[in-house]
Image (cartoon, rainbow, N blue to C red; front, side, top):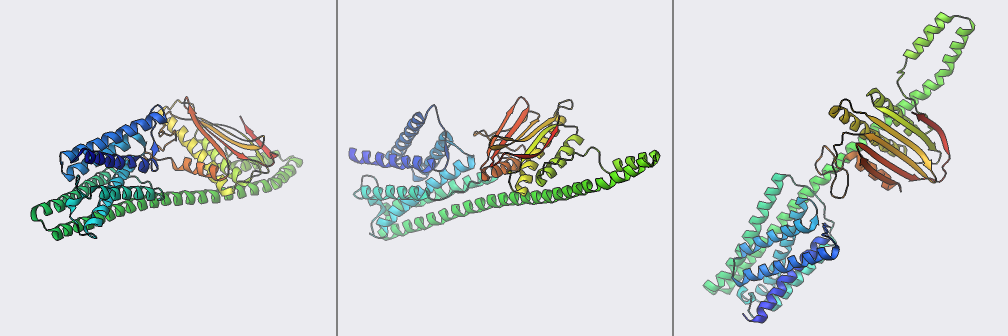
Length: 457
């Protein structure tokens, strides 16, 4: 090989490694070191090192199997160093890019061996057809990377056993394919039978296609499993919301009946008082008081969904020994769908009550409280809740609050709250400080005029 051949090999290896940046930047969030320019300089340095490694392996004629394994490890290391994503995503996209390399190598090899009846040896480094073969190879990689930008990749999570199994399958497949490729090359040198050598190349290509189909099938199974899991969670959440809304409507109806009957009770009380029948009057009042839970908070804002949710949850919080402070001024123009209103407030209060309960379990003498406000602020409607918690909290690298029950997942309640706010042009701010948890939500209003004001301090 001449100096020109070595230079050409390095250029091809460099382009092969460079396309990794274009491929993965579109799939995962970039991890910044100091600045964007500094990060990309580190990435280019990594690409140069990777190209040198491949060139050195080719110079010393290291076997295809070991070469492919090193490429796989370098791809995975690259994803670990420069991207914020789950280990599953990094492993998966490293595998996909190595599959692109294999597919491109298969295309370039078959084009010359099958259609032009040439030997694989003619495509090796330093041979006459090396340059056109590698141009087709790099061109195929660029086309696959370009196409990958238009594919919506579903993010899924593997269990440790699934991840280990996936790694074993991937490495075994890549090793077998590279071994078949090396056998195809060696067969011509040993037997000088171009037909037999090309048949081995076809078998290697067929095995490559089957292996890529297998990887695609594994991806499809996992993404479908993840979708079904999310759909079941959403279905469960919707069923809970529907059941809660129905219960709240029943409660609102019973409160309206209670209000309606109050007039008749007052008439009876007035009659007994006029007759000076104080003993019977006292007994009647005592029976009336005992006919309902005196600790039940009756909220009346004019909005049935708000009244139902708050009446139920405020009473529950008080019965559990949680101090509650609220101010409610609900405008006429607050037009959020009743079911969505029930879901939004229900999730806010459920999270707050649960946090206070966890605080009591961890610190029995701890001060548990919930402060809740609903009121117009200029042309916006503010919903604000503040509660105490035990300090146990989890966030991801983006600052999003994670579930304490489900690893690396946003809680279903908070996720639903975000969806409702975002889908109805609202603004949400979540923060925590010194064992205090805050959620502030604002919705746009056309008319800030309010109906009834309810306050408890």
